[in-house]
Amino acid sequence: MGIAVQLTKILVACSLLAGCALNESVPSPSTATQQIASEVANKVSSDSSASAASVVKASEALTASEVKACKENGYVFSQKDIDALILNAFNEARGESNAGILAVLGVTMARVDSACYPDTVHGVVYQRKQFSWTWQRGTPRTLAAAKAIEPKTYAKVKALVENYIAQGAKPNGSLFYHTKDVRPSWSRSASIERTHVTGSHIFYDHRRC
Image (cartoon, rainbow, N blue to C red):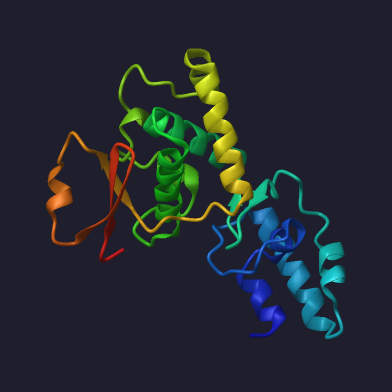
């Protein structure tokens, strides 16, 4: 596939600036970002000798907020995504070991990659009736609230999330989980396949997603 065609299908500016591999599954960028990407694509299309360096130079109008962080498959984390990932890990798995917290993070990113769920971290976390802490009373719903109730645990979770993103934020192949002390009806569905157990959670995948 030619570089001009590739550029029109993905946000190459962010991929190049942040050092990520090119991929066609990047969430929809803002209108301004789309315009920049289009201009970069046009430049490369009209100049067959254009180098990666010239593409980067042409895309310098991309703001720092557009390039927050990125994982190997090209996903760009907004600040809202990062905050949502921290809050979800804190509320869902703060009593778990590092491996248990990472397993929950892996489910979040697996849903981002799945065609059955929203294509942003924020969208996945706040999808209606998916993670109970988002609607139940008494749960910390801001970073400040989480930090206030358990500052040391919050710091641990935040550091794990930041490192997870820096290492590529890879999904773990599971879309669901529940604690060992419950057995929800959905876990007995023929389309649900148990994948692994980590800490106090049992994890599952969906055969059709």
